[in-house]
Length: 130
Image (cartoon, rainbow, N blue to C red; front, side, top):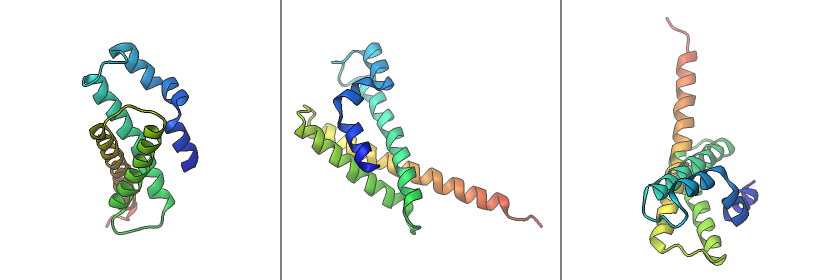
């Protein structure tokens, strides 16, 4: 599954055919760097990595700090994506790459945190009331 996600994240064809990219480019233009389009792309990245953080949390055994574990794993995956994109000829700078990895870490943390809180809420709400 990680191999498929890595291919999808680094494939130019997949990247350019995803709906958010086309919507952003139609609304804001492809060369519109440093504007709302960039922020929307980063938000989209956080949401996508939150899904991965959720999957990481489900796939691995319990730990005392599931959010930190998911954040580190997803940040590592995001860093691999940045390296592959660089090798493929991407022209992003180091700051942009660092922000992308930070978005991956934030997304991974959010995915695991939301799942942890939802699980705790379900356990609490199922307890018999006296």
